[in-house]
Image (cartoon, rainbow over all chains, first blue to last red):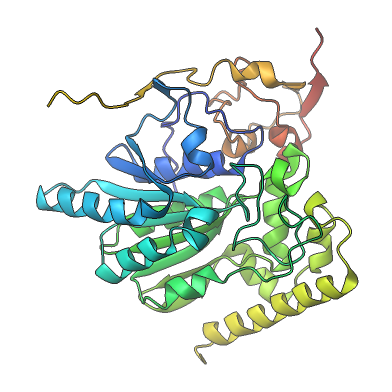
Length: 293
Length: 81
């Protein structure tokens, strides 16, 4: 088990909702990155939870930028730091809207240019900051304020889009496994070039479950196979922790769906489609672990 | 350069005393606690210190610590006022 630094880089307290998993994630990202880091934040929950001007709870430099430009700004910042001979970590911390929908061209461009930075997408599967509107990251069947009868389209597979850029390191993590997350951020920052980490961050008010169950919901997502923890280091694929067990034996997705208000009234057909998608994805990962594809 | 930039400075309590949001207060039963530290690990706001004392000035009362405690040593008690 890695030794987690005791320093906290977020002063008490952000204005995040009670039980927010994104602020839990941010705590561990800062612990792994250390004080010599800069955070680039586009419009997302993190841009509003910092505190009220002229005060901020973040004890690390944070640069708030426009929605579509996080990765582009980080590119410029990283180039400037490296030209000055400084090793400062440049980290983009964006939500799923700012990554999957609005920021994807800037992200793709930065990955293609080989910018030395780490892009973290914390995925709460909707535009939670503005009141839970549907995003490209929202899963099939989930109710949001703009899909009141359940979303009719599938979640965009961001990880495969990013993997197609053949970057040195990419990983997925979940807020329910903070030590695994810490290890992955630490490893990513030790590698030069573009890095990407996709983190599932359950959102109690948006997903409609009690705030105390944030960690449980993340663990359920991994145990049912709705979320898979893996790493891709220089193209080598490996499954991590709880997802190894989920590969052999997993809970039915129904256990995960019925715990959340956003899937209330979901029909059997949609549950069937979600289960099939999970099984198909898991089969694909199993083949990848064996090196078949 | 004389341009005025909008810069925020790090301050404790930048979002006010968030402890006032709480409806349920976590209370630790020291007899049952085995000091595993899982509550501190999972606290989203880092309100539990190394001695496993809860900072009630800022604790938002989400209840994650009580839910994740393997010994059920933390109870959520309704705030009286």
